[in-house]
Length: 543
Image 1 (cartoon, rainbow, N blue to C red):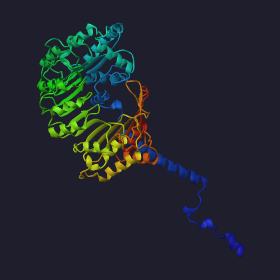
Image 2: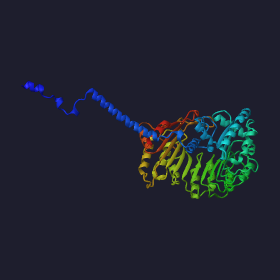
Image 3: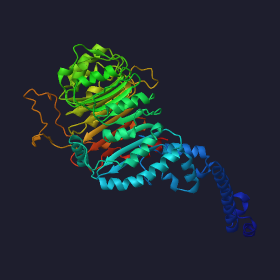
Image 4: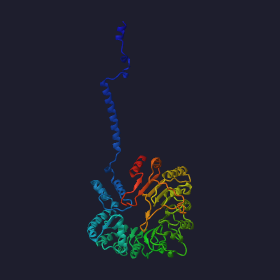
């Protein structure tokens, strides 16, 4: 009886609810198919939603495409006709883009041509150049023009620069002659020229700029030396002229009350600097490279110029100019070739100027000397220092204590010796400044958001003019300036945990980069840390 009861009683599986019973293979397959169909429908709906939001480049309005094309032009405004760069590249993609490119006048408003040497090649090249110029400027229509006409030797590297400098020293090379057809064509469009940059002779320049020609749009010409008469004509016929670049210093027999920016590459006397200030009282920016300093050209009493806000001086002992100068509104000061601290400090005190951007070279300095010098610039927000020979000491002096330069936000340090960097100490300095900086902007210590290091490839010593190797290992016992010498050898880039910590600071917003230049092999590309690819990936991750 018990046996019959057991046989007739339901099994354990039969007593379970239907939902908990093991499904048959057919039911399992049907369930999986249903789930897959639901997921596919959801993905299809989501994909369609995204597709409806995607705008392809060809569906953009022409005016938007045109603005994007303009942003593809070089930042410096120098557009060379090449099928691999804008605007010619953009006109080769498809018919629609070609139509937009040809209709965008601004794309064709700038053109730079390099005429080859010798004369035979130049003549052959000019035939093609004339066709390119004609097509280019016709597409620009009435847009103001930027033209650049230069020579090239076909020789790469420093030898080309040496060759050109030899030609300029001993007169024009016989092959440096631009066919008259090119000069006449450019001259015919002189009324449309806004920016003109040339390295031609003064005779060629006069052919481009007709006598007493009206150039109502001209703002920034680059003129050759010995072109005083032509420059006088330009000043008379160019009411909008604001910036002038001179490859060499002429006698400057003219003056202007509207010119606000002047760049002179090679001046032969100190007296020419003060003549510039007298003849151009409206100058706000002056870039002056002095070929040779002689104190005989200094005025008897300090000269005051109240409009100048930016001054760039370059040349051996050019800092001597500051000893007889008062610039009360100067904000940006650049001094190359390791100037004298005492002269600069005396100038700043006499002028009572508020320097916010300083670019300077420093050589053979102690920590106390550099720190004492920087105390005269409490308003600095941008500092570029070219140091020799101790980059680590310079970083220490600039960043510690943070109260020394409380408004500093951009720092660039260039190392002229080839030393490595003590990145462990640098990390500590950055963290110290970060802790004292106010995120809300209410702290008296500004946040340093940009730090750039540019280093030479480490090597022992450098080659002197006599061909001998000069070693930078100064003797501490002889009382040399390097009385705080650190003989530890450091790497050019951060490594290990320090590298990881610096990468974290970069992720938090610090723009930090290291560039290594090989001075003994100029053909080799510089190295970077973080690597260019790594920096791009970090930027994408941040977005």
